[in-house]
Image 1 (cartoon, helix red, strand yellow):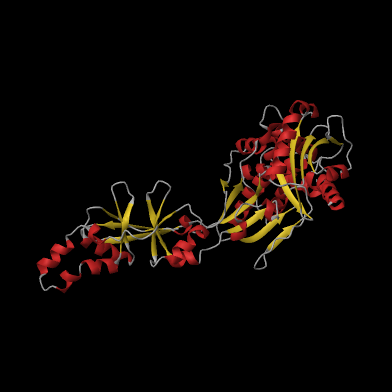
Image 2 (cartoon, helix red, strand yellow):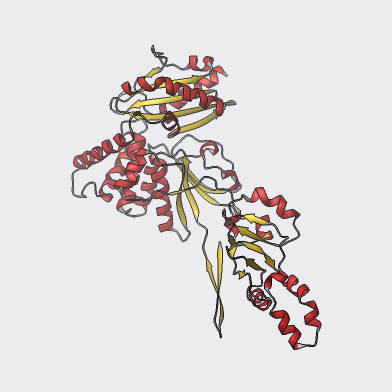
Length: 470
């Protein structure tokens, strides 16, 4: 966005131009978990400090309780919320100087001469009355300009600016997506358009040429590589990099990009490793968040997804985060990590009286295979006995989810982080459910002892069941 402001004095007319460079967005998956938030914050910081370009961390949903705990613990702000990355009219707005009702045609001429752009005319509430163009001015003042009387010309210049305003031009809402206004813009004979905010107040001008060829938002995807899990509107953005630790999905790009997927327990591990390889020491808060991402995704290294690389980089991050001292022995550092990890997991564990929509929706991912779509949510508890009093409501919520999302299968994986076991609440096509190789208990849930990882343990089994039954 380019902003212009005019400062007028008796002797000087100055145009001050300020520009804001567009930043590349670093963002994780929808319904972000601790790792998605931590890796977005950490990688945006790392890229910002190792390149000449601008990067900003984003999130594709609300932060959960566990992430809120970590953000507050390490005194770091949550990333900006991005609900859609398609280009909006406001992304192309130029804040041009405006005229107020009651100003003169002379002042309109001076404004147009300075900016070489039409002059917006606003009312007392800063809402646009219309545009004054150079052509409109000449048409209004044609008779006076052709006159030999200087007095007649002076009187014409003193007329109110609204006498030359064109109010027939379309006005665009800043929050509108360009794809939604482009047909209207194409039908218009004008080359400039007024833009207003949600309250109808003047925001600036937008050129037709910019609307016809808008820039695409540059995006770095972290902790995911599937379009179904990505921030809405990604198909209209420009993915420039992917950093992930999940299974590979097909994601077409128009040009080659940096694409890195490695089998570690957390995307935060990959971010931290890249920093350490470059000799970079992360700030205390960011190091703490990256450590939190690792501990959350690996359940303090108890998950089968945990690797020696996760443990190794966690030692370094704990020192950077000041949870331990560099001189401490490895056993003491690991104990400090474990103590903090227990607090972290406890902050997000439990069903309690949380709404069932929150329990299911906070950490759910969708997958598609062979024309079937499945949703798998996961929630952590300190004891599986918490499940029984909420089971009926959870089952009903999953049934509603299968209808609204047209799912073949919907599962809630309730994981006991103390004992390392899970129970599955399952809704879906009976033949698919029957194919799942887990014992059915009296309450109709499926027993999954030793299953803690959705990605590495449950998902392959679910996808295999879908392949066999579809």
